[in-house]
Length: 343
Image (cartoon, rainbow, N blue to C red; front, side, top):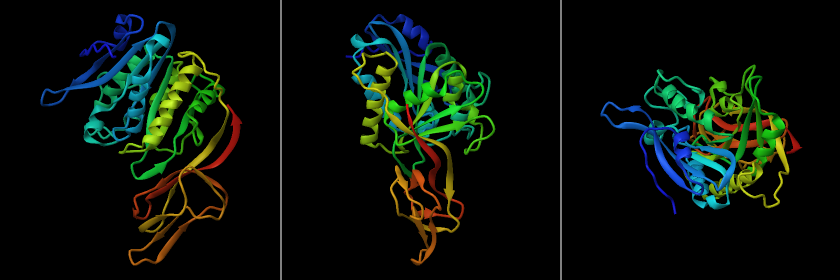
């Protein structure tokens, strides 16, 4: 049973130091207050094993509408037996409480993307203060960081992993691939930070990249679609966390070893040219052959306006589920270059 010690304020490091071997506790990291006086807090859970070892930090809901990782992290934490652990586990299930409560991706108070705001500023905007509050704790405590995400709520996606590559990071790519493989992902996407990205904004401000710069083993797990729970993918996330815990020496290894992964080195968003109704013609999490459409856009009168098709095979990472589209709307996220690598 959990030894609950709910605390307001303080630090995760102090909470971990206060734990005796085999204990668990919970608390809150205070960021500030709302106009009404209500506090803005980041909840956390901590656990200490019977022996010294690595610290695994799990972070959820950095985007407030991405929920599957929250549930997977909590399920993993509940299932852990600290008497069998070497090291410590920290879970911050909801790192964007303002977006989470509003059921929105971004922080409503400033409309910034929290996962492009790290390491943050103690005297900045709301997003920057949240980032500072969280990252100040992580960089002093964690050895391994898993930052949970999902796809856009309008999309289907099988679980996959993203890791960043940049000149400022410490952890090498082979180490990242081996850790990513523990989640049995559809693909593992290599995302360069220097020299641009397929995503707009401050990609270098992502929590996992700032973790890499601080010397952590850090990566993203994209666990299905947003704004909904997907039990099979939540369970896959929990299995991956147990394998990762064994891989880093937090738990006793059971003989599992990382196998091969499909590493995507180039990917892009796919937009439609015509507005209308998007009808799926493929399944997310599959390799679509050249010439096979992934979807068709038809008018509200039922006439075909556009067929979304490619001249070469693509790895279909995400596929739109909401059929209502306008010109320029995203309908898919695809990998266009990939190779099979042994992790």
